[in-house]
Amino acid sequence: MRWLIALAALTGAAPALAEDTLALPDWLAVHGQATFTLQGTPGFSSPYLGTNSLRPHERKETIDATLFVGVRPWAAGELWADPEVDQGFGLSNTLGVAGFPSAEAYKVGKKSPYVRLQRLFFRQTLNLGGDRQKVDGAANQFEEQQAADRLVLTLGKFSVGDVFDTNKYAHDPRADFLNWALVDTGTFDYAADAWGYSSGAAAELYRGDWTARLGAFNLSRVSNGTTLERGFQQWQLDGEIEHRHKIAGRDGAVRVTVFRNRGRFGRFYDALALGSATGTTPDTGAVQRRRTRMGVDLNVEQAVSDSVGVFLRAGLADGGIATYDFTDIDRTVAAGAAISGKSWGRGSDTVGVAAMVNAISKEFQRYLAAGGLGVLIGDGRLPHPADEAIGEFYYQWKPVAWGALTLDYQIVGNPGYNSDRGPAHVFAARLHGQF
Image (cartoon, rainbow, N blue to C red; front, side, top):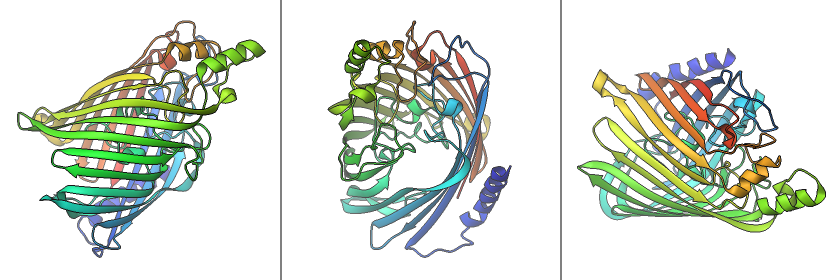
């Protein structure tokens, strides 16, 4: 209840701030958000349970409240700090489904609220010419005029997803889809701590309709861990090419992203061989050595009318080596649409609908069948492996510009790639406010 009161207080203050009753100098920007998510699943077929199984008859909540504080030390330079209060748990302690149903649930759950500095980064924009366009002020973004051709440099602690694999219709679990493998491509094993942030640097070169991006980031010290490497002892390199276009006068974009991870990773074949030789449960953590893991993702967005936009994500990653920092998906295809409420007189409301299929390699299937555990999944056995098939539908009701209530439903077929389990029906309500 304390969290609901705090959320109401935050969102209730938003209109006053939006009307500039609190005047700020040009070199300072302050924004905030708070999001409360309640998610639950009723009963479903669950003939056995493992360490990382999704469990039936659960209800969990999460909340995060973030302050975005920016200062501009000189023209086109921005320094941002994002302290955040977090609390709560994902379903089954954020385990049991590779395409996990809530990207608002971190891999570390806690009963009591705690504070973390999630982002602390510097951004410099070098305008290179071309038409100028106005950019509205928002979280981690000053209001400014940007040139069409520009070089953007970002350095510090931030999310890889702040720069790479973005999508207009599916990329923000506080405002659109909730599922992990919709807000990011499921095979993109991006560098991150347990909260989804890393330290590193990125460069973006905008030229006409094209953008090229390069980034280097620290992996976590241990797989899926809470502490990041320092000095790039284990690292990720990211590259992305984006092309923006118009089809029938409607905006669209195509992005191709590649990643290369280098660190101490475990191979499924080695873990199975060691387990067989010693009579123990296979564990990729026991066979880690210096290796490289790579993957490639396709990300498309396209407006098809004034009120409808569609998107597609697809990805492929090395299925012989265990995922390190994101989730247990080696192949994925996801598609969906976001529909504005203009056609029924609710222009601020949004309906979202999407579906995905996630898959893993045969080696990963054998590893799970022998009792091995992935980053998120592992039922202790896998007698009948199958692809994970997930659908998501949401309705976002936005009565005011600074606040929204979203009702969300997901159906998860073969959670954890196990046809003995599910299908699981997952229901959620999300309350979000921002200024």
